[in-house]
Length: 279
Image (cartoon, rainbow, N blue to C red; front, top):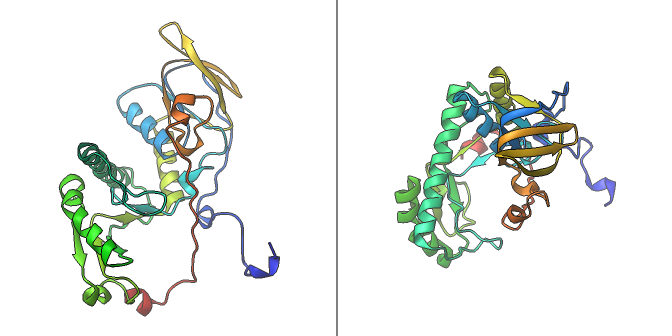
């Protein structure tokens, strides 16, 4: 790629890392035993560790890279509360069993509430806001499809969603580009790296052992518990939580076949003038 296409201030590292850059820090020794071993130190791993520790469960988190290296500090920062459930890779809506959709949306609603509660209780300074979102419709058929989802979103995920016709679209965005669209009131945004740092700090305050550069190379039964082999030692655990998401490897082949890694590409503009942002 020709270097001249880039701005002079271009950097290949995520913008979020200017606020918190993933680091291994002073390496915490991998303990010999733990009641629960968590594989993966992202949002899921840290949240699980935080919850278990609050209930007095001895927990260790095992992270293969620096703390925050993965998608937890490199995502878009949008907290959707389930609005994308049923969306395919092409962007088109796919048919999913109704009961299953309700369960997934209910879980998504709970996840939104959990993030809100964690940020408040742990005093995480991560620019958390809940302004809602506008989902533009590409054409009448897309608008109609959105309309058909309203009842489901509102009933199962408490989305507070409603339709905005084309002639009222400028009440939401300063553009006539879309064919109207859907407003989802229960939707938020945050600084993903600072949210990660907040979870990390909360775990550390409670004495959770968080081991960076401790890639797990093997997990197998050992009596009534588990033997967990890492790049920095072996430990025995009563239970193992796999929290690797898109980084799920051949370590857990059954899970690997069920998790699809997704690339997320984000482009940032210059800062918008206040009057334009207001419109």
